[in-house]
Amino acid sequence: MIKSYNELPLGLFLKVNAVLEDKALDMLDQQAKIIALLSGKTENEIYSMPLAEYSRLAADADFLRETCPPATAPSRVIVGDVVLIPVQEITEITTAQYIDFQTFSKQGAAGLVGLLSVFLVPEGHSYNDGYDMKAVKEAVARLDMPVAMGLVGFLFASLLGSIRASLSFLDKMATRLPMEKRENLAKEAEKFRKKIAGLGLSV
Image (tube, rainbow, N blue to C red):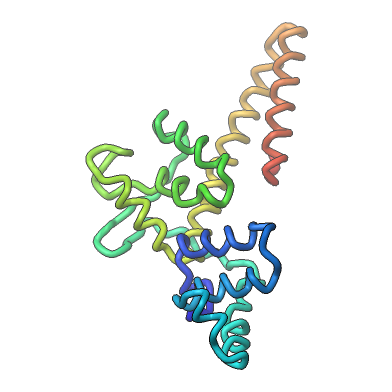
Protein backbone atom coordinates (compact mmCIF):
# COMPACT_ATOMS: atom_id res chain seq x y z
CA MET A 1 0.00 0.00 0.00
CA ILE A 2 1.38 3.40 -1.00
CA LYS A 3 1.25 5.67 2.05
CA SER A 4 3.07 8.84 0.94
CA TYR A 5 3.85 10.98 -2.09
CA ASN A 6 7.45 9.76 -1.95
CA GLU A 7 6.17 6.28 -2.87
CA LEU A 8 3.65 7.50 -5.44
CA PRO A 9 4.80 7.52 -9.09
CA LEU A 10 3.48 10.25 -11.37
CA GLY A 11 1.69 7.79 -13.66
CA LEU A 12 -0.28 6.29 -10.78
CA PHE A 13 -1.08 9.74 -9.41
CA LEU A 14 -2.65 10.64 -12.74
CA LYS A 15 -4.91 7.58 -12.49
CA VAL A 16 -5.91 8.65 -8.96
CA ASN A 17 -6.53 12.18 -10.21
CA ALA A 18 -8.74 10.87 -13.03
CA VAL A 19 -10.88 9.09 -10.42
CA LEU A 20 -11.16 12.28 -8.36
CA GLU A 21 -12.26 14.22 -11.44
CA ASP A 22 -14.92 11.66 -12.40
CA LYS A 23 -18.12 13.44 -11.38
CA ALA A 24 -20.19 10.32 -12.12
CA LEU A 25 -18.74 8.58 -9.06
CA ASP A 26 -19.95 9.21 -5.53
CA MET A 27 -17.44 9.76 -2.74
CA LEU A 28 -17.42 6.17 -1.48
CA ASP A 29 -16.88 4.70 -4.95
CA GLN A 30 -14.07 7.19 -5.53
CA GLN A 31 -12.44 6.18 -2.27
CA ALA A 32 -12.69 2.47 -3.07
CA LYS A 33 -11.19 2.96 -6.55
CA ILE A 34 -8.33 5.04 -5.14
CA ILE A 35 -7.56 2.50 -2.43
CA ALA A 36 -7.51 -0.21 -5.11
CA LEU A 37 -4.99 1.81 -7.12
CA LEU A 38 -2.76 2.57 -4.14
CA SER A 39 -2.86 -0.98 -2.76
CA GLY A 40 -2.51 -2.83 -6.06
CA LYS A 41 -5.68 -4.76 -5.31
CA THR A 42 -8.75 -5.13 -7.53
CA GLU A 43 -11.92 -3.22 -6.74
CA ASN A 44 -13.67 -6.53 -6.03
CA GLU A 45 -11.00 -7.34 -3.45
CA ILE A 46 -11.51 -3.94 -1.83
CA TYR A 47 -15.29 -4.33 -1.63
CA SER A 48 -14.93 -7.88 -0.23
CA MET A 49 -12.46 -7.11 2.57
CA PRO A 50 -13.47 -6.70 6.23
CA LEU A 51 -14.52 -3.16 7.12
CA ALA A 52 -11.73 -2.80 9.69
CA GLU A 53 -9.08 -3.56 7.05
CA TYR A 54 -10.76 -1.20 4.58
CA SER A 55 -10.74 1.56 7.21
CA ARG A 56 -7.02 1.02 7.81
CA LEU A 57 -6.26 1.34 4.08
CA ALA A 58 -8.47 4.43 3.86
CA ALA A 59 -6.44 6.00 6.67
CA ASP A 60 -3.21 5.14 4.82
CA ALA A 61 -4.54 7.04 1.78
CA ASP A 62 -5.15 10.22 3.79
CA PHE A 63 -1.85 11.70 2.57
CA LEU A 64 -3.67 12.58 -0.67
CA ARG A 65 -5.56 15.28 1.23
CA GLU A 66 -2.29 17.18 1.57
CA THR A 67 -0.41 19.06 -1.14
CA CYS A 68 2.55 17.19 -2.59
CA PRO A 69 5.80 18.81 -1.35
CA PRO A 70 8.03 19.37 -4.41
CA ALA A 71 11.64 18.27 -4.28
CA THR A 72 14.45 20.44 -5.63
CA ALA A 73 14.68 19.84 -9.37
CA PRO A 74 17.71 17.60 -10.04
CA SER A 75 20.26 18.31 -12.76
CA ARG A 76 19.86 14.75 -14.03
CA VAL A 77 17.16 12.15 -13.51
CA ILE A 78 17.93 8.43 -13.40
CA VAL A 79 15.04 5.97 -13.79
CA GLY A 80 16.23 2.39 -14.18
CA ASP A 81 18.76 2.48 -17.01
CA VAL A 82 17.38 5.75 -18.47
CA VAL A 83 19.33 8.94 -17.71
CA LEU A 84 17.38 12.12 -18.46
CA ILE A 85 18.75 15.66 -18.52
CA PRO A 86 16.28 18.50 -17.80
CA VAL A 87 16.36 21.52 -20.10
CA GLN A 88 18.26 24.24 -18.24
CA GLU A 89 17.51 27.22 -20.48
CA ILE A 90 13.98 27.57 -21.85
CA THR A 91 15.28 29.97 -24.49
CA GLU A 92 17.34 27.11 -25.99
CA ILE A 93 14.45 24.73 -26.68
CA THR A 94 13.73 23.79 -30.27
CA THR A 95 10.63 24.72 -32.24
CA ALA A 96 9.49 21.08 -32.02
CA GLN A 97 9.79 21.16 -28.23
CA TYR A 98 7.79 24.38 -28.04
CA ILE A 99 5.01 22.99 -30.25
CA ASP A 100 4.84 19.76 -28.21
CA PHE A 101 4.85 21.79 -24.99
CA GLN A 102 1.86 23.80 -26.24
CA THR A 103 0.02 20.58 -27.07
CA PHE A 104 0.57 18.89 -23.70
CA SER A 105 0.04 22.04 -21.62
CA LYS A 106 -3.54 22.26 -22.93
CA GLN A 107 -4.31 18.82 -21.49
CA GLY A 108 -4.00 19.87 -17.84
CA ALA A 109 -2.90 17.20 -15.37
CA ALA A 110 -3.46 14.45 -17.94
CA GLY A 111 -0.69 15.95 -20.07
CA LEU A 112 1.98 16.04 -17.34
CA VAL A 113 3.87 12.94 -18.49
CA GLY A 114 3.97 14.21 -22.05
CA LEU A 115 4.91 17.72 -20.93
CA LEU A 116 7.84 16.50 -18.83
CA SER A 117 8.99 14.22 -21.65
CA VAL A 118 9.40 17.36 -23.76
CA PHE A 119 11.86 18.87 -21.30
CA LEU A 120 13.65 15.71 -20.16
CA VAL A 121 16.00 14.50 -22.88
CA PRO A 122 18.11 11.32 -22.67
CA GLU A 123 21.75 12.06 -21.95
CA GLY A 124 23.79 12.47 -25.14
CA HIS A 125 20.76 13.16 -27.38
CA SER A 126 18.93 16.10 -28.89
CA TYR A 127 15.16 16.32 -28.52
CA ASN A 128 13.30 13.43 -30.20
CA ASP A 129 16.43 12.37 -32.08
CA GLY A 130 17.86 8.89 -31.85
CA TYR A 131 15.94 7.64 -28.83
CA ASP A 132 12.64 5.98 -28.01
CA MET A 133 10.15 8.64 -26.89
CA LYS A 134 7.86 5.92 -25.54
CA ALA A 135 10.65 4.74 -23.21
CA VAL A 136 11.15 8.32 -21.99
CA LYS A 137 7.44 8.71 -21.22
CA GLU A 138 7.46 5.39 -19.36
CA ALA A 139 10.43 6.58 -17.30
CA VAL A 140 8.74 9.92 -16.59
CA ALA A 141 5.58 8.11 -15.44
CA ARG A 142 7.73 6.25 -12.87
CA LEU A 143 9.10 9.44 -11.28
CA ASP A 144 8.05 9.87 -7.68
CA MET A 145 5.67 12.77 -7.18
CA PRO A 146 7.98 15.19 -5.29
CA VAL A 147 10.62 14.94 -8.04
CA ALA A 148 8.00 15.27 -10.78
CA MET A 149 6.43 18.35 -9.13
CA GLY A 150 9.88 19.86 -8.52
CA LEU A 151 10.69 19.51 -12.22
CA VAL A 152 7.32 20.97 -13.26
CA GLY A 153 7.84 23.91 -10.91
CA PHE A 154 11.36 24.53 -12.21
CA LEU A 155 10.27 24.40 -15.84
CA PHE A 156 7.34 26.75 -15.36
CA ALA A 157 9.48 29.16 -13.32
CA SER A 158 12.03 29.20 -16.16
CA LEU A 159 9.29 29.71 -18.73
CA LEU A 160 7.75 32.53 -16.70
CA GLY A 161 11.14 34.22 -16.38
CA SER A 162 11.56 34.08 -20.15
CA ILE A 163 8.07 35.52 -20.69
CA ARG A 164 8.75 38.36 -18.27
CA ALA A 165 12.00 39.21 -20.05
CA SER A 166 10.22 39.22 -23.42
CA LEU A 167 7.41 41.46 -22.19
CA SER A 168 9.90 43.84 -20.61
CA PHE A 169 11.75 44.04 -23.92
CA LEU A 170 8.49 44.74 -25.78
CA ASP A 171 7.59 47.48 -23.31
CA LYS A 172 10.93 49.18 -23.95
CA MET A 173 10.64 48.79 -27.72
CA ALA A 174 7.12 50.24 -27.66
CA THR A 175 8.43 53.61 -26.47
CA ARG A 176 10.26 53.98 -29.80
CA LEU A 177 7.21 53.33 -31.95
CA PRO A 178 4.65 55.80 -33.31
CA MET A 179 1.72 56.31 -30.93
CA GLU A 180 -0.76 54.16 -32.92
CA LYS A 181 1.59 51.18 -33.15
CA ARG A 182 2.57 51.67 -29.51
CA GLU A 183 -1.06 51.43 -28.41
CA ASN A 184 -1.66 48.30 -30.52
CA LEU A 185 1.44 46.62 -29.06
CA ALA A 186 0.36 47.57 -25.54
CA LYS A 187 -3.07 45.99 -26.14
CA GLU A 188 -1.53 42.75 -27.41
CA ALA A 189 0.86 42.62 -24.45
CA GLU A 190 -2.05 43.12 -22.05
CA LYS A 191 -4.01 40.29 -23.70
CA PHE A 192 -1.00 38.03 -23.24
CA ARG A 193 -0.66 39.03 -19.57
CA LYS A 194 -4.32 38.13 -19.00
CA LYS A 195 -3.84 34.71 -20.60
CA ILE A 196 -0.87 34.04 -18.31
CA ALA A 197 -2.88 35.25 -15.30
CA GLY A 198 -5.59 32.78 -16.30
CA LEU A 199 -3.05 29.99 -15.69
CA GLY A 200 -2.56 31.25 -12.15
CA LEU A 201 0.77 32.91 -12.98
CA SER A 202 1.82 36.52 -12.67
CA VAL A 203 3.91 38.58 -15.07
